[in-house]
Image (cartoon, rainbow, N blue to C red; front, side, top):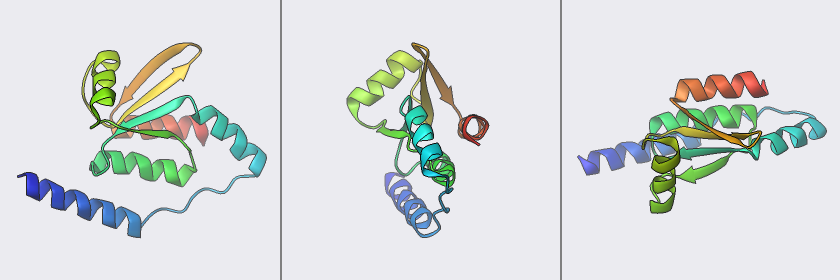
Length: 118
């Protein structure tokens, strides 16, 4: 089962690289403002997870520079479980007004990003 998952994961990454969506073009001043806003966001993810790839593709479409955190690393995994409550990816960490919110599910994350940055 591990070998099948590994092979499928590599196929997903290859197809994502070949068919990467175009980045949204914004005026430089507007992009700088968005880059500053995205500094408060982190996406906990696995590289070959199809739902994580889905979120990363939307991030690329919108030209969002969100910090990617590998949830397979022990300290990141422990932080995700301790603060968010469960080990599930993709998970978007949103720091706003001194508070931290954790958002799960790829469709909810994409809706949030579209609403906030579109």
